[in-house]
Amino acid sequence: MITVENVKYSYDKTTPVLHGISFSENEPVIIGLWGRNGAGKTTLMKLLAGHQQASEGNIEIMGHAPYNNAEAQQHLCYMQEDHPFSQIWSVKDAMRFAKYFNPNWNQSTADKLLKVFKLQEHKKTSKLSTGMKTALQLVIGVASQASVTILDEPTNGLDAGMRKKFYEVLLESYEEHPRLILLSTHHIEEVQPLCESLIVIHQGSVLLNETLDELREKGIWLTGDKEKVDELSKGLNILEKKEVGSVKKVMIDAPFSKEWKERAHANGLSLEKADLQDYLLNITDEKEIRI
Ligand SMILES: Nc1ncnc2c1ncn2[C@@H]1O[C@H](COP(=O)(O)OP(=O)(O)OP(=O)(O)O)[C@@H](O)[C@H]1O
Image 1 (spheres, helix red, strand yellow):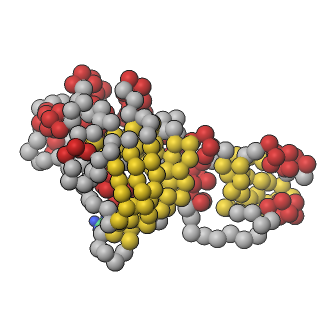
Image 2 (cartoon, protein in one colour):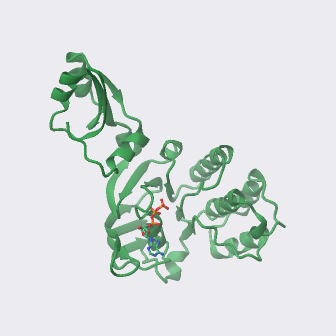
Image 3 (cartoon, protein in one colour):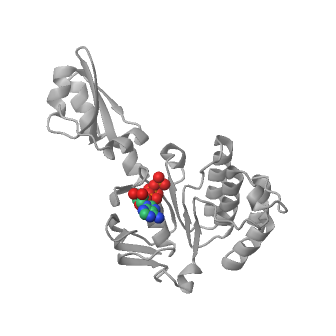
């Protein structure tokens, strides 16, 4: 379905933004793309959607290179984060164009979603609020039922209620028509139940590409007597540390495993699973922590 091999990209030939990205997926799946601001998520999505051409490397969408290629575009729907609707379009016009460009378009889904998100067809897109423009993009992204659907920060500008609605709608549509959906997000906690796997982009490279089940086991907090904590964590990758008096708490880049539970218990220390968002923030942090 999608193959990305050693893809490099720079906007101005002197500052590389992507440094050799590789991944592939051949099954219908919802994949999350997570990274700090400026990590390269949007750039990667633009390359996948064929809006830009990779400086080096190879991209295939359903067997076709996406750049300047109508064959690949037949299978693609890309919703950008910056709402590129024409000023003169009404909601109805936007839907008409989307229907024209998306061969798998599902009109009944589109009609249903317009109601869910309370979008009036006669309204000019220029008169929609930021959240409503995002909602309109979501309606198109979901109703397109494209084999490869790319959604860049799809919940930008949506309030918590609308975000919840969007996740429900996306999952329902995916279950009816399984396809490859790649969505970038900063809200890892919210998309966790939706995504089967997560690609973490850090400074233009793939730092992690794992299933959510694997990721949920990563990162542990070890707490207790300072000397014992130091002894057990010596030489390991410490992601964060806190100290009050003789009590120390460290986040270690280690699995929440049976072995660790036994080790902590045997040394009178407590062990907790680190929050996934905190774990990701720490592994993409520049700071270095030494005991
Ligand atoms: N049009 C452009 N011209 C030059 N540099 C750009 C352009 N767009 C993005 N960049 C640079 O490319 C790098 C990656 O940006 P990109 O927008 O892909 O990151 P991102 O992960 O999507 O960030 P965010 O989470 O903030 O949206 C950044 O250093 C950014 O400054």
